[in-house]
Image (cartoon, rainbow, N blue to C red; front, side, top):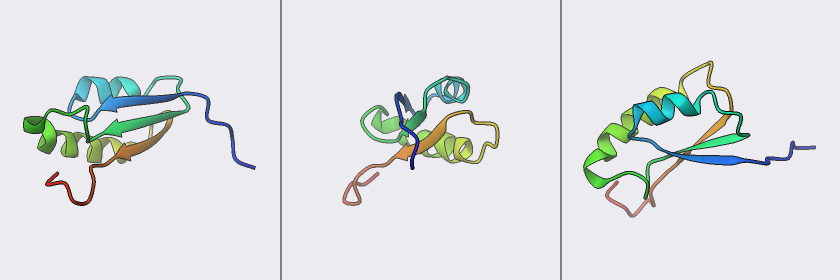
Amino acid sequence: MSQLQRSWMFVPGHSERFVTKAAGVPADAVFLDLEDGVPVPEKPNARHQVAKALGWQDFGPRRFARLNSIVSPW
């Protein structure tokens, strides 16, 4: 049986400060956003920040990346 996910947190992926802080929150899941929460000029930086965070071993909550549509240029 899967565990109930009570709380989700969406974090803009371009902010290193927000991503680092999200690693220690008591949420059940953190969605590292590459979509609407990221200004267009920051999208390359967001991809870098999210890729780095997905590799962290000590990231507390379950983490997911919220991606743009496959037809999007991003």
